[in-house]
Image (cartoon, rainbow, N blue to C red; front, side):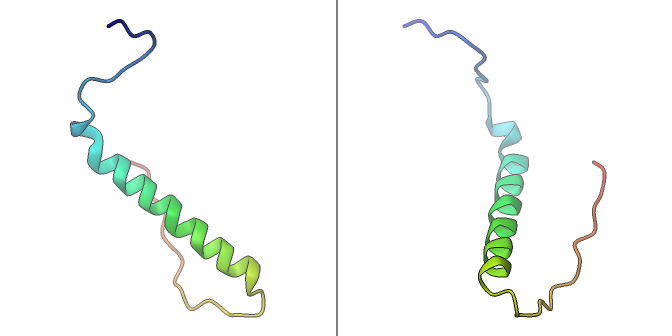
Length: 53
């Protein structure tokens, strides 16, 4: 078997940051969908502080 391209043999080390990033994307997607469908609903969520890693 021969593969071409970039392949990472050990994704286990980066599994936690990948899962955190995917969770953040899913949560933000749901928040934006809710906001788009229910424009008159006021959100009680506090702003999420940004940070530089």
